[in-house]
Image (cartoon, rainbow, N blue to C red; front, side, top):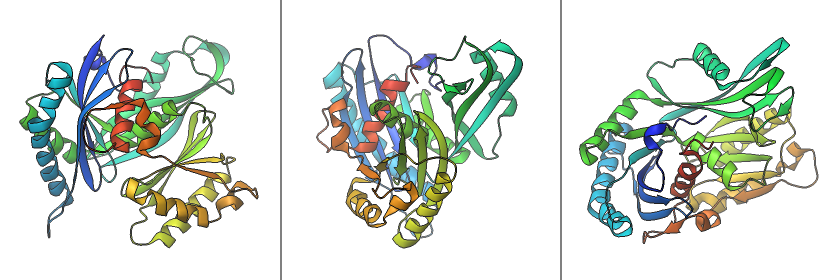
Length: 347
């Protein structure tokens, strides 16, 4: 189930503007998609958020976003026009990371004594009935990321008969005031209503799964934002999520809390050998050294330490073509790949 509906679906070719809003920066990229070809980044740019004294961080973020938008119009649209013949886009996709968004993982259960046909309508009715509203927050993403029928992970579950079924749901919420501020800023700059907010956690996790399909069991350690998220993937299904305060300023406390969260997960599930480390490029080396020195192997009940795999832009840059003169940006590339894989109801 994807939150991208028919308005974003086209055949042939399309151009989109991708915007990423995180705790410390905002970024944007004009991307050209052509069926059967590698996505082309015509232009990309990232701007740091600079908070003034006594200024709410939301205001600083919106100011940075306005500056980014002006640069995208002045430099990015002409670059897209040179690549595609037009500087216009089908839609603007905005990814929100912490602290602006919150992600929840839960499971819906279905069981009957008599075999029943498992359908999408059945799942959607259960989601609507049991959906939790969060005051002041907007539901940005509600995706079925795993389905188990009669105890077995099933890739194509709809239309099959079963007695027991469970679906794993990833729901993400974004602060309403932030969504409104961002969409108002972008509408003023680009004169469009086709702005789709999404949550970065769901986006990054699903992009990594699609990009590395052979890694069916992994821990994804996302340290890109103001919070560190741990995602446990078992048999290609998200099994658990945990959250750790950011490591900024106190690495020892961050590492201790991280070990506690991993130990709690290990009580319920065997931890996979592969750990994907997703972080800002300038912090990747120090974080990997910290994790390597932490001797986490005791949590894996093994003398061999887990394999920490830093996910760098260079590891995924071969999945895109880069026309922008700026260096490859990992988070932008993951957005590009997510839209390629999931923007047309493929996830």
